[in-house]
Amino acid sequence: MYSQLFVAVSVLVCVCFEKVQPASIGAIAQNIHSDLILLDTNLASSVRPNRDGRQININRFAVPTGGAIDLFYRYGFFSLSVRVVPRDDPGSWLVREPTSRVFDDNSIGRTERPGPNSFVQNPIEISICDDISELKEAYFRSFKAEGIAQPHKLYTGSWRTPTMAKYLGISIDVLDGDSSFVLVKLIKNSGSVEIDGRNLRLSTGAAEAAETVRAGDENSVLNFVENYGSHYIRSVTIGDAIYQVLALTKEQMDSLKAATSGVKRLTVTDWDRLYDNNLAPWKVRETGNVKVASGDVRLQRFAEEQLRVNAQFGSYANLVNGLTKNPANVQMLEDLGRDTTAIVAVDFASLKSHVGNGNIQAREFFTEIIDTHSALWEANL
Image (cartoon, rainbow, N blue to C red; front, top):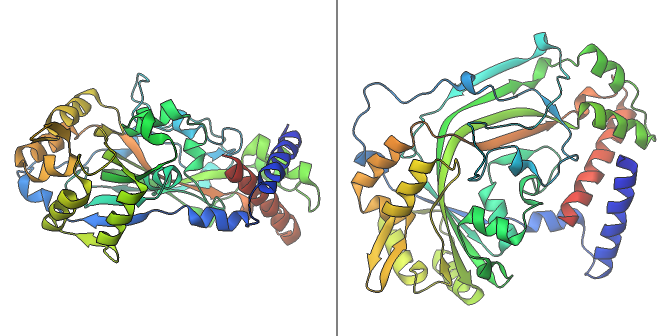
């Protein structure tokens, strides 16, 4: 199966690259990178002290850290099995992607790191995105995969325009290729689970299969990946995110970039000025709706109804001003968001260091095949 897929994808790459100026796949990947500005809002000052604490028991979510996964089997479809965007699926699942137990249980060391479980502890992220690709990269900024230059494509490669519009809270019209975007995002970190990779040992069956990987034998690599995986889940961070997308014309983006050149952090006063001059509804192509990554019904309704500002010609969604201008909204966000959950960061680590059993050539060949597959998938999604 994998050999046929590899050939098919290779042909697609050749066809695509015949029509463009020569450029390495690595260079293409590096170009997809949005600019990040942090907005310091001091929202915590609007929240009453919480005497009973907000920390939650991360262990009860049973996220499959340490489990192995074949990234190529569902490349582009991980937003269906990892709760990263608001979905209509019932239940409280966070990760339902099938994983393989490739490590000896006694070698797995898990570290749980409780988070503040609070939106107001973090600055608001303002991502400046030239196009749709950079917008998706910005949304998945905290998602990593070893050897994958564009990990956001693991989640968004399958998105079609209507799906993308729904998840991002914007209309199909502004996804026509002529827009730039600003992503405004506030993340809640409820805690993380991380695997210590220093003492990991493969289980007996996986170790025996890893020894069959041979330099120059592509099928030996693909057979191992198909049965045991290409990566394992090194860490998962649970929390939630509330976000809004603004769509700009290219000319409007040029003005915004001129106004934010060299800027890495903003105060609320700076933001108010920037918003009035560059990002107000009458200054941009479209003001998107405020969305909640967990899809929690109560929190989403609050975001839609309360995180707004009234202007002369109507009422508009406004995540930042809806919080900074109304302290009661900040407390409501904290109260409603206390138990909401989504995945806000994932780190996939390669299994390459566990292949070859000291055979450097086999390990390097395994890495070469995995990296080639990754580059081909990235180039075609």
